[in-house]
Image 1: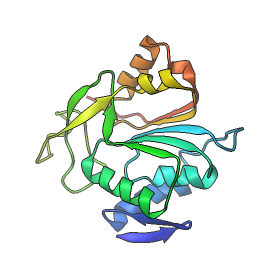
Image 2: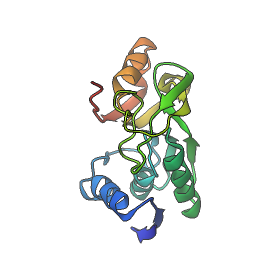
Image 3: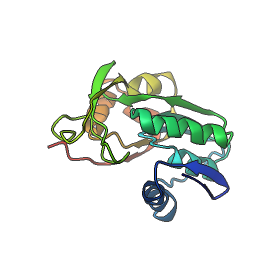
Length: 184
């Protein structure tokens, strides 16, 4: 489905998923942050279909964004949403983030883009396993500083933070917003 919301065309897998994202991002404003710069540098770990990116671009049209999404289905919609809205200064990565550069099993939920997992015990209802590339956030923070980092990494948040601590790159971002997922 495709709907126009806040001046953006947004394509989603279903109305239910689109409504859930709009509520989380635009109504509850869970990812709102304040920047002293008109063009902040942002990292979006777990970009899903890109609603957060569109929200960031609504707040800060001149922002520069790196976005990571491991789910191939969500990534396809993410690319479409960025292209159909002619969003600039966004670099997309079809990868997850963790503490190593490797290939990782990803367990997509068959009926939803929200119940995915990077852990076999949580993805046991998934009919398929997809191999996805894993990257390290510290590699990007080693290159340059960022103003805001959103981490919603399907249970890998702790692993990402440990990598940032180990590589001494945690302080290379001004603000973090971190989702919490139980991994047991």
